[in-house]
Image (cartoon, rainbow, N blue to C red; front, side, top):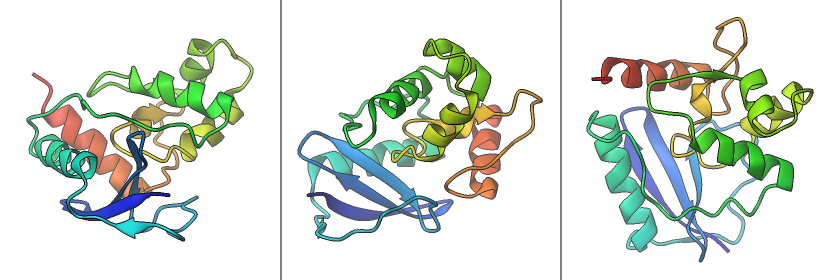
Length: 161
């Protein structure tokens, strides 16, 4: 079971979810692949969710480049978890292609599968799937909406020092 709270970000409301293991979800209002909140309980005082809200605030203010939160990525397949761990290594303000991620996880022929796993990342922003682009450099889909991807990349590019 997840506990949740809503965080009002500069990009609109974000649904934050946590399990007993850690942060399990950061969802935009119109998030593709979101499975719903059946059985979830609201908890505005949950320590991990409060910490997440605080760190997101400093991220959006341009003061935070890395997140320090306990994460629960256990709800994905082994392959998805490998992709999500690779995403966590993408530096603030940088981008990588789906092919780059496929090579990093030792599956160079799995570019499409990497794209699918990237799109099902439940912890947007914190696990920075917005930093993954096409090999051509084009910005492609984002589960939280392409305008949010553009805005997040723009925020990061403007704060690189």
